[in-house]
Length: 476
Image 1 (cartoon, rainbow, N blue to C red):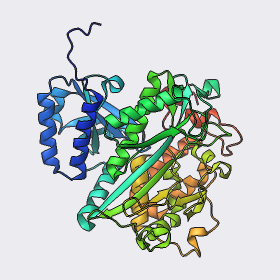
Image 2: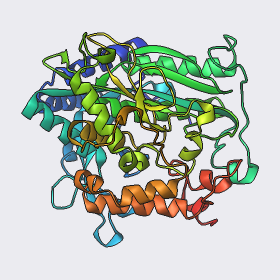
Image 3: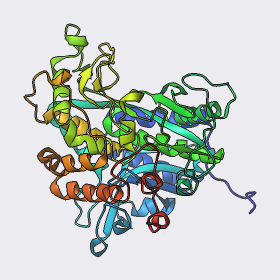
Image 4: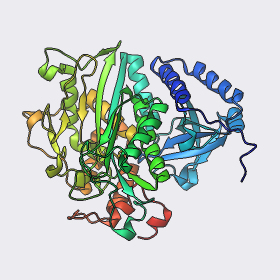
């Protein structure tokens, strides 16, 4: 079809970066949502080259869903955007399916046309129940309310940065076809930091990094990881909701760029046995009046007492939150001590087998690193559980808690059992969400062997929450 008469928005990467950094500054400075909403609505009305607004939301497992609304329709109806919640796994039952989408105007992004299509902008939505109250299964909304409440009541700003590893495999839809092929094919075997400048993996990393810069991620470094065809593209700290949004955008843009190149970007925790798996090391800190509350120059490892209390609470509830941080059958392959896996329920400044690490830092960068988070975790649920547990969770009386010889489960069935019986999880999530999450995880676990064995089974990929669709599930 001819494009001769079309005039859709397609901005340069420099223009995109400038716009996205301006929007990011509004979030950091907590500009009133009314002011931001009016600014965005005026922009949409004035910018004739925009044809549609893509609204993003995530389900209970963390799968990202995209809905495109005609721009003119959205401007007039943004307060009454409805959708069928019964079609989303873990959301409402069919008999009570109507849900609404609210727009978080502060989470508005300009996107590269060569990756996301011309004439579009994206914005994150909040799911609202049919009675007008926040929907309990929308963990983004739960996290946002929690963060806003802590800022209002205590002046706390919750900060997070994630180191998200993934694999680049040959061919499109490599995960969806795994039950047929039984293998993933590497496109590079260079290893840690080592790859030729124009190698396919390097070209993929370079392209993804450019897209991140354009979207205001404020990159830090990027490189091939330890395993063949493995990558990591790091970016700076953000307020916790923005940080979780960036995880979703990171995985989305990586998958799209890989698809454009004829590859598959996979965030399965351990897609190939015999090489290092992928993690999502989660660095967190709390600040008040722009002062890092985790920094103490004279503290142990220069971490403050509040920081160590935060760690102790995480370690005390390690089994309770394990299913949140490692939500898939495949994730428990990654918790293998032979591959630097953080499966030990302890804290250390140097031992990378520890669930929690205290990296070297200063007054600005001091943080706690939760290393046991898998890249397929729901980022909103993971960050909510980490902060809520670290701030208000119970503290165990185990002697020498930070060095005790305790381990995370080595299969999902044990993690489901711990999660299901946890009073702490029921308190922070509510028994309804706790039960629905268990049902989703049990359904996948029941389709896979309890004993993982020595090679990746088709079922643990086929029924993975980031892969499954109706067609694949019907093959069971």
